Image (cartoon, rainbow, N blue to C red; front, side, top):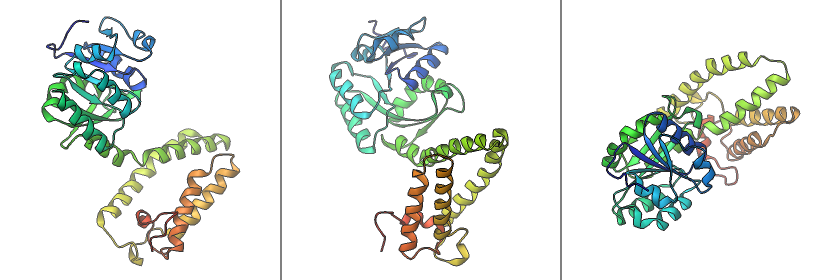
Length: 297
């Protein structure tokens, strides 16, 4: 393996799953020399080419570049790799891509510092197909000097936002921003299935999604920001009781259509807990004060 530690244009990628592969292909396509390693070597070898070299081990990948993107399944796996190759860390910046809690990120940062390395955590808010486009968004946090040193490489990946905070800040911001997406996406897919079954044009459904949701997002966020009292009748746009009934109706409808009802059954239980707690007439944004398994009073 050639030591490329002084070649700032190089980067290593450990883990060639969906995101790792997208990183390798995007960076190589931009003329960056990439060193790739994957536990199943065939996945890395499938990416080999003019700009991509396959490492024999994670240690070789770490030693080959100033910056390594670690795209493995979870934080413990990343730490196992780093511990096994700790003698190859000196001067290297590790960018952890798998989800890590703030505590785990702090642990990784301290570990890297013990071996004269640097740690950044990266949150990926993109499908692999969006890597390399402006629509691919990435949050990154940690040592600002390490970020600036790697920035020329990272900017090839998409829209990268540096979070001025300790390691773990990127994943914390991702969780806050991305938390609403999964239930919304599941509901959109279920809606599309129903539309097809009922001969409602999908193009029409998509137009309505795009027309309606921005306004509802604006209204909801303005309500949240206002700090209004949800118990004040003047502030009630939709009550806990209304949404309890609505969630139950949607669950029944999904059941009739042969689709899973679990998400809306859970919402019904949550709002019903609010009704039982005497909050039925409160605005539904008081949902953050509710627990379906634990009445608040």
